[in-house]
Length: 169
Ligand code: ZN
Picture: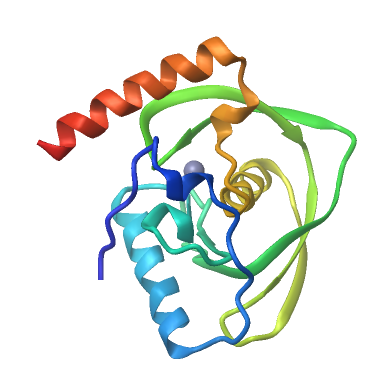
């Protein structure tokens, strides 16, 4: 089932999300709905708070061509990150049509719980690395525009608010 994606500014996008305690069928359905919503948007990542659910759950698929790799992470955590950084032009499904360059660690090692309740650990590089860091930030109430200077952040927020009001009409 497609979910409605919250548009910035929204207080729910600024909240720290709670850890997932038990993997229920309800949570698995939610993860499947989030993947469907992400592909439909279309986007490469979506975090639960973006659909108003304040739980530590993200979905991603950064494959541009070829076999899709739908990825679901419960309680994802950055375990280590490289000193080397990478600049990537980021966007966000909660801030439509706005893009800006963000500097982040180039590689990260991430731990999470998968759909079967098993712990996983993996190194990410390239778009996957940028995406997983961006999505985990969402679980801590942080948006990519929080990495920008105040002027740029305010400008993007104003444009997003305008769009949000237009969509609400
Ligand atoms: Zn985002």
